[in-house]
Length: 158
Image 1 (tube, rainbow, N blue to C red):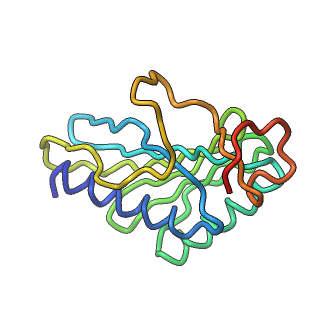
Image 2: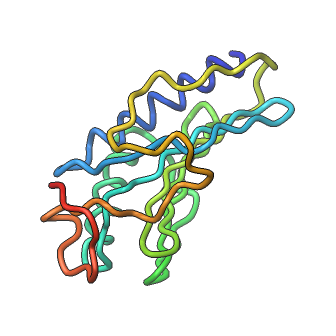
């Protein structure tokens, strides 16, 4: 397996977990980074996930990852910044973290693989990100379900 193969495998894992979330959340690509023999793919959820709904989201993801044969390596149950960390049988490390303003991030880190060029992901983001944006903005897309109880949600899209 080379770095491009690992990136494609990571994309597949990210696509699968995001497809499992119902109602769906909207997301954008985070930066792809490479090390000397590793690659990391990232997705950032742009749907506002209220504090009241975070546990539901983490539960859906946790059940899916366990059903997929991933081994849970750590769980952070912090009320404002919960996270789940898992490892696949072939050594990929996968995480869901909740950051500032409840923004949800999914990351996949590959094990050490053969060095190669890595192309951009071919998975189509489901939320718009201004190509000129230097940083991914805070979540700003409203969902009647996931954003329930969240104060001051700017955009409206279910």
